[in-house]
Image 1: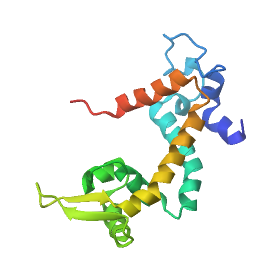
Image 2 (image 1 turned 90 degrees about the horizontal axis):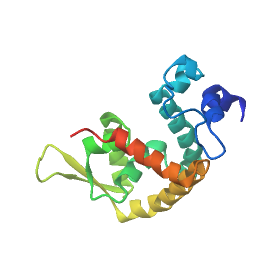
Image 3 (image 1 turned 135 degrees about the vertical axis):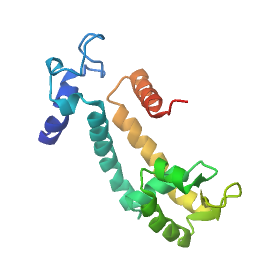
Amino acid sequence: MNAKDEELGSTAANAAGAHGAIDRPASADISTPAAGGRFVHRYLASVLALASHHISAEFHVQVKKAGLKVTEWRILASLYESDGETVGELAHLAITKQPTLSKVLPRLEEQGLVTLRTARADRRQTVVRITPKGTRLVAPLCEKAMAHQRQVLSKLDPGLAERLVEMLRTIITPDT
């Protein structure tokens, strides 16, 4: 573990067993200082943000090698395997503000990577779709992203890795 890892996550790393199992009782309250570590290492939003930043930074090297900016990658990856998204939904999925999309989407359209069309149901909305050219560009990157995810999750038991992704999906799914 390097100094930065120690600074950002030594508590989590020390708490993990050989296969990622936590060495404390299931009933332990990790939200208290008695559980060990600083607030930033116990607070879920902080731990998720740190993990996301670390994992994303590693993969963004591949994105840049493919000639894309991170925002372009997020947009194209969000449209991949989709029938299209409204600009508002795309902003949400790509973790990008709508004004940023308004600048990037015309450039991606000029490059032939996406199409922009007025929605039939609500003419105030624009639907963005990835083109075959965009799909050809982003598909190999999506495969590399999934390989990178497998490598990151290889530190955990396979069942635990699947459960982690499942649990995170549950957390981000809006209550209906």
